[in-house]
Image (cartoon, rainbow, N blue to C red; front, side, top):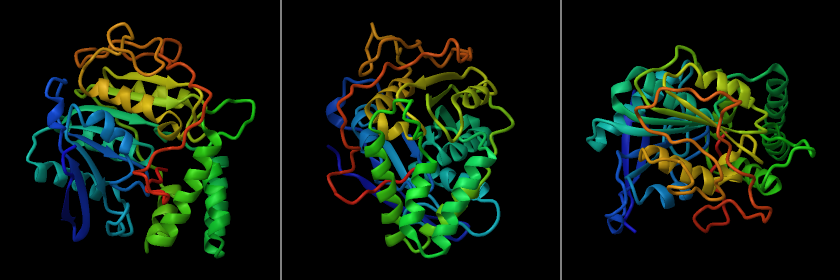
Length: 337
């Protein structure tokens, strides 16, 4: 396994950084692609994606980041944060010395990745967006505001519980793989961030109150959008509608999962992302994903949006639970929104 490289940068006077795990030289026979930059949720730092390292490391340099307002980076200043975050991503690409990059944005990070692709489509080879918060209803926002008030009242435990629950599907009639494990993990992640980051509370408030812009459409960038079938933050139907604004996009639902699909179905998601970024078919006859039974062939030349009725669906997960992975440390290192 190659040694990771960590670099520090600044944008608009804000300190931030990124990590590169160079492509594994032992995987010389595997398909190769442009570097992959993974952008997660509000508190998702550069060390929060070990499953992506495992899958993508054979085909690309894997890049993760502490963008402004995330991880150990400086907090975002008041006002719109999107331009600063786009500039920070551009800074990473320039520092890497690459003309194009693959982008994977999840939840809050999906807005950053989508905005980067809109403003500089020529620099994005392929785009994957998951758990896209295109529409958040008033009821869900009210729920999170109650959580923020708990934090203001000095009750981090109450905040962590409410915030975690507000990002999950707790309906007992809907099966969610690893639901309780994911729930405990997310709650611990919030508490850990609050205890170890001076600006974690403000970052969380900002993320929960933010209204990212997913309007304007996109063309010229091969794109895959995926959602957990029980996502209660933004329904799969709403996310499918968003995918329809992107020329040539594909949409896919992942069963037995909610907004936290990257925890509940981590291996399947990582394998899916890897295959898309390398332009390989997702047909199970050619090379199946874990537990895969049906999926489309995805190539950059395709220009068809798959509707919900046609959308490929990963099969149900196995019933045996497994803990979300995090570099062998008992302290959680990831808290995607």
